[in-house]
View 1: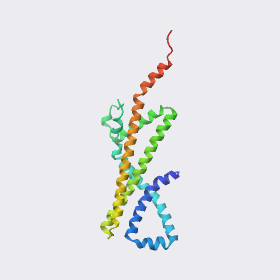
View 2: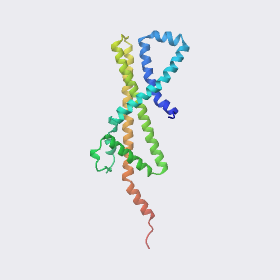
View 3: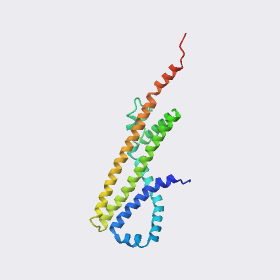
View 4: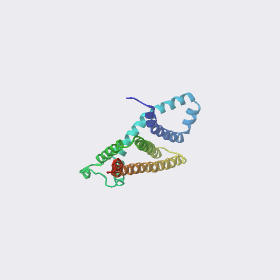
Length: 224
């Protein structure tokens, strides 16, 4: 399998963020770890950082797969009603009501790609690029949300199992605020994507006949 730099970034960031949150917690619980290791033994510290950076990539990959499986394969993000509701006279297949969420999602993706293929190259490149940008942003924020959520769960376990100083709770509060803001950001881009897709599908479907009629009228010659 070809491993590209984009995969390193895509899988590395959630893994590195997860490890970074845990490092913050360990340093607060055991400050001597920071003083004795990171400050007094820089060579060993650099080796540990390199190791953690390399471990972060597979950890991020696992987090990404968990995000996709729970949030897209079986999650609410497959509910495409917010897309179809924006399309006047949406071309539902006859068995639409019998389809599950995944099949409905697959049909809308097929319809989306089908309509894109009929557009001019310039407009198609813009729409496809914008759509890809939304997806990349959503997945990036989503995996970041999951990595922070997993580390927050570990924070709670540490609070229960280990005696912590009062300022440890400030870190927990900070991370909770970060998770809430990340979730709000995730919801914003998710709704933005579905609105974008719905409005363009409406344009593709309902303006096609108007455009076809206009082309026919332009192609007609006046009768003598």
